[in-house]
Amino acid sequence: MAKLWGGRFSKDTNALVDAFNASIDYDKRLYKEDIRGSIAHTHMLAHQHIISEEDGQKIVDGLKEILSEMEGGTFAFKTELEDIHMNVEAALTDKIGAPGARLHTARSRNDQVALDMHMYMKKAVTEVMELLIKFEEALLTVAAKHQKTLMPGYTHLQRAQPITFCHHMLAYFNMFLRDFRRMEGVWKGADMMPLGAGAVAGTTLPIDRFQVAEELHFDQVYGNSMDAVSDRDYILEFLSAASICMMHLSRMSEEMCLWSSTEFGFIEFDDAFATGSSMMPQKKNPDISELVRGKTGRVYGSLMGMLTTIKGLPLAYNKDLQEDKEGLFDTIDTLKFSLTVYRDMILTMTVNKERMAEAVHKDYSNATDLADYLVKKGMPFRNAHKVVGEAVAYGIRNHKFLAEISMDEYKKFSPLFEADLLEALKPENCVAARTSYGGPAPSQNKIQLEKGHEQVEAQKKVLENLVSKL
Ligand code: ARG
Image (cartoon, rainbow, N blue to C red):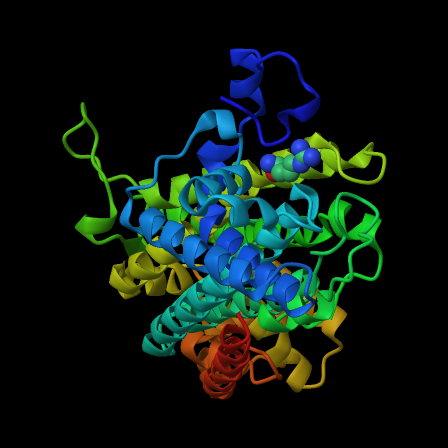
């Protein structure tokens, strides 16, 4: 098949080269952006009298027809035509004849693909942001239900101090709030219009890049043609933000796997969100969490892959840059899928409050509270730490938790111990007393839950504004 760039060639391309060069299998997902970009380009060419109004109209009509064929699944994509850009252009010329050959005036695929990718990135990032909001809302819902559900807070995966499940969920909520902010930054990086940079050095034709930017709702226009065609920072920014977001989901996954084990028994997934074993009839496995944890690796891989692909590239466009797509598309799909399934999974899981309560009651995680008790009675904290440490060692030796040691025994450790220590040791009181700002006390969590809802509402406004500028 004759190539759109075939003029200086005297042989057909080797079939392997066609196959190796082609990106159509994956870049066909840019078809909407490609056609919308071409329509804006055509409007501009006609407006600038670079092509006639009449040709412009024929091109636009032809492009719209191609769009509906693609949408209806009747368009025949051709590998020999390499990529989405040449598939569209060849189909246009087939359809409308001579005027079709004017579409690529003052344009290269280098700035064309950059335009498509910027537009696609802006759309994808808003979809991720929407899913982040939904996930944040799910976390708030679960947190709000468990304001009094006691559980141990861990350090070094050892029981440390009593907290609530609400507090634990709100910790994750805050991470995803930051992911949203990072995604907003990705939008800003992608909101710059590259078309008109040509292959590398602009064009001699009297184009108006700002008109194209305006029609496609771009806030800015690249100020350097070489940067415009070789910049992939916005993709790297997305891959970084996606990696961090997946890292958050992965940490959560690790906890979900632990918590759903018999050893912890803190949560149970709904049957619809767990899987069985082909051999062991009793098994109920947390596959979703494991997969999200596992998929985090491939998202990091895409980030590393892209950083590595670009690090040695001379300016400006090199075909290496075609490698920006698969990792990005895969990351978008992986992140969106993970956020979606995780939302439903946490909303349907059962929280075993009794098991969590047992883990704080049958434990020494109220030891810090006992030390604070002595501090309130006037003892320096370092001394209190030592006294309580001795009481804990005594308790372990004699198989008694702190609340089970008698008053007489306590008096041997310090005369400051009095009967009211029993109240101080109750896990619910320990948590309720942790009213320092951002602490786990239900009174603090209530404030944070309210604030959380306000933050989500503010993010919805941000998103609405971005979507209106797509
Ligand atoms: N498919 C190419 C890509 O994704 C489009 C640009 C190709 N440009 C070129 N001069 N071969 O990067």
